[in-house]
Length: 261
Image (cartoon, rainbow, N blue to C red; front, top):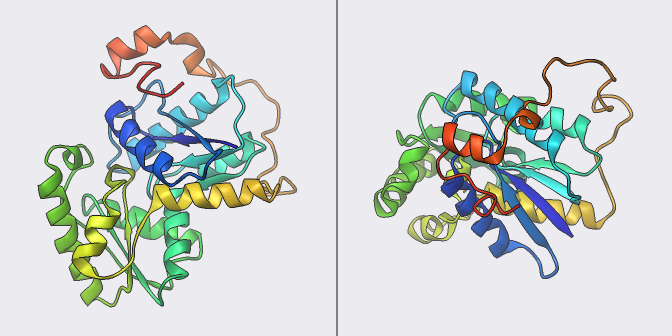
């Protein structure tokens, strides 16, 4: 089985961290391929960047030339998954719903710890749309920007633990890490708090293995039917970008090696 994990931002070091977490939890025989868009924001902290990223991710998916059995979208609370479900004929899972669904299997209520406070309404909206908000005890921001998560691992973990402890006081019995950039921190945070901590990347990979292993895929009967054929000007944009051009203009760390393809 081959699972594609898509980092929605263009920071390749974050792609590498997400890949490491996905690979660590994947079953024997599951191949993890992780990549990011060729263009778009280096981090996503708001609706504007979120919708730019959604377009960039869909653009990237349109131009991939290798097969995969499931897609994991590694952005927490960000748009675009529904478009990918229309575009692809394999299961599509995102880390927001996967984390919340797994958390609800482990406790009566869950809390989400994310990055900046401005992300909180966006995540709450996503959970509400998914029908998962009712059992959410709260979504709390750490005050850390997405790119700050990689600057000082000890400081990042300490702030996440402090914020998660507040969520537990609010009634959360399980904590969800609310950013793909927090991948890999769940064990340390759980040890500090004494409650289960769900990493969305890990949860989505395991759900993807289960869904694809059962031979299931997104229903195309109605909501997620394939896009109707029509002309879209200058689409897909990635066909006009070479890897070298994308590297020099958007993300100096991007390369086919760091992106795993």
